[in-house]
Image 1: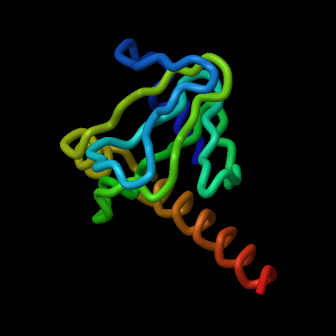
Image 2: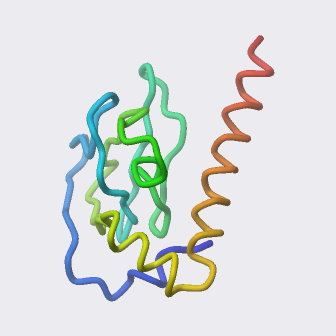
Length: 122
């Protein structure tokens, strides 16, 4: 799912510059992010696992039962990120057809990609 269309007119967002940490592994998390502009690298053990482009989401695990950040997120260039807290997350699930399945698809794709990478490394 392309999340950008849901948030393209959002006026409340945080900005990050190149190399700035969005969040750090092990830190508590209570929001997820939608990339309104720019890109964010997801980094674990000095490896870039994924680059989240405009319209993508990150940090969603914090809202579905895993409140500790499992990786680092670093801005790649100038970024604008819309924050989605738990209350808004539940409103989006209830009021926006496809939002919940879109988040689940992103999570499943990430799990599949990581599982595939680990399987082939061993």
